[in-house]
Image (tube, rainbow, N blue to C red):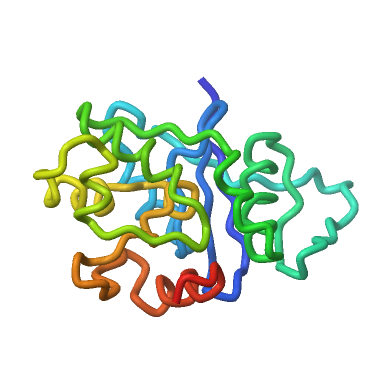
Length: 188
């Protein structure tokens, strides 16, 4: 079985790394620490090895239309994911929602992640609203847990979930990144 692939690109919010395995993103976030991202992946999906994707030595340099410093890539799925991140930062805020994501957990959390992918840019929900949309109105803590255990940041937009009182709440990559993302999307 081939190793999972990764790429890190520079964004206005700091380095963003994507890890793909097969046909889907399995982890992503604002870090250049691939091992930390892989540690977030469910053990049944966690790759044994992750290879940074790189172009052949003879390949010409890739120029990004978004102005972001992006690597030239050879893996098609990784290219799609990186293009979606570039698109997001170039103003195509919905671009990450089209990229396949694979995460594994219990039935509620799996469903909650699918529901979260339906929260559009510019829209925010509270943990209470998120629990309701996920079909378990009393499961506010479980909804918060789904955000906390989300390994595929941006592609599963946990940054769009706020505390019930409307404050930012937590975010694995820092509140300044969450605030920046929401401002970019016109939510704050």
